Image 1 (cartoon, rainbow, N blue to C red):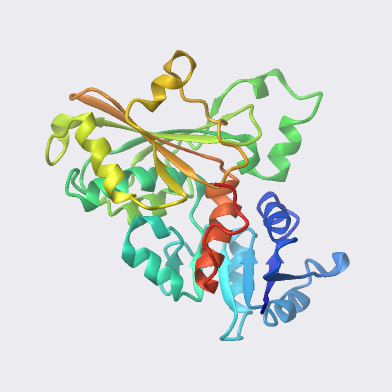
Image 2 (cartoon, rainbow, N blue to C red):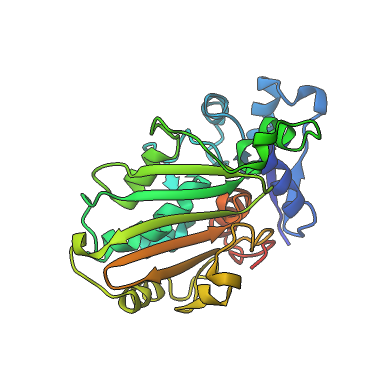
Length: 317
């Protein structure tokens, strides 16, 4: 079997570590390692990147742009986990379930922007509404989302796991209150909206997990639908997709107290969609692991499609 060579630039972060764990034992992947003392050496990183078939960039935005620019080998394919290239010209957005054209573009791509975790949940809910003519691109969307603290990086993980931490770390905390969260541009552009949503992210005292919620007032939709009709629309849109699962209508009632927990599918690389509510007011929910389908799981799925492998190889469905 021919192996693809893979270099992870930024392998010490949460996304990079999970990527390495998922890829290390695969029989179709050979990981290229960098000497620990050279992991921040731009010249050595560029050399190894240009030797690889696939490069994952798990870096801050500025560093990701610098590393991407240093890759001159036309045969090297890049999957960038940062925000830097998600809606940049010449880069493909790595969310194959959105449409057949998204999947085909990914299959032939050499430059891929890996979706953000919050954005994955929001777009999975809103893109089908816009594409199906159910909501207008001018609809004033609101998005509430709760996430585990691992998505905030190693520094925040250390603060949450410090035995001497302040008491407020035990409480869910809202942030990005100035409406300038870094995921907002892709949420607007990829979903096909004229304006960004009002976004309310919340960090919770759980390591991983995420629920993204979009409320809908049906009187403001382009055409009024019942919860059952909207559920059928989502089921048809995502029919046959292995990493996006539309849960049976009423599935949320199976949870204790009719609640949806944020960390119920940790360790899995899928996204679950729930449709709840009544004919006047509905709530759409997307549940995922912020480090799975929200980060490294999505990146590996993109690599699998780009390389012609089974798209869920090495992932947990």
